[in-house]
Image (cartoon, rainbow, N blue to C red; front, side):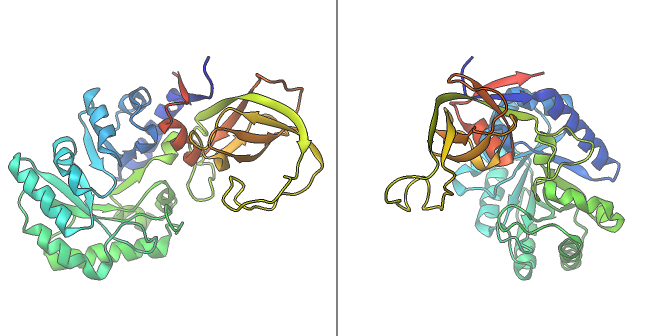
Length: 356
């Protein structure tokens, strides 16, 4: 067996996808499953196909193409606002695109007209998180221009919260989005089909009947893959949790002073951090690094193991208090969060082990 290894519980992911789809459909909300965390892995994508998920979203057009090639015929949404250089492929392989720029909407319209295809557009509105999105004051001007474009249909508006600034979706900002949509409908003289209220973090809004009635779409990734919420990584009740487990091999096991020796450069991997002097400690170095994982998202399964830090190829742990005797060549197991999972799925150096 090659290490590091990522154990992926495909069956549990399928169960989560089916459960969430059923939960949202009961409230007349469409699930768009965000699959960017798969990094185009078609073996894991089978979970979504088995759960009969009819709408997916990915930030990379290359991944959507892979899923089309294995027979996915449902709706595909371009999750990241498009680059001009990828518009041709977006029109060919997707059905819906998020947009914020007039130029990109015009390019999509032109290409869709050339190939005689209709593309749905969702205009993203920034209501506080300060990632992508047009400001509400500028929305009507863009929407009215899109209305005049051939071969594109403005289906509605959406927003993103909890990903950049960490703004939590709540009753206030969601009502703000609802009001923005209603004001835009008045200016357009027609209703808009879609109010896409956000990601996994927005699931908490469904307990409010008024908000749930206004929301028509959620773009959800983490809840399906890990059963966790991006807001403080809380466990979502009734879902399978931590469906990805990392295994890494110990390549050095030695007792060393806990405090580094010498002048510490800010540019080093320690980044000038203050390291507590705990005297001599048993350290295990594992053959996995920043190129493969986000070490902040590793949760050791062996009691007493502490993750200290990471360089590009080495994970440093304190195993002084670890339960049981460890040796070079032993394997340590970790539960991982979304950030660590995303990097591990992307790394070609992490062996993927699919558990059906």
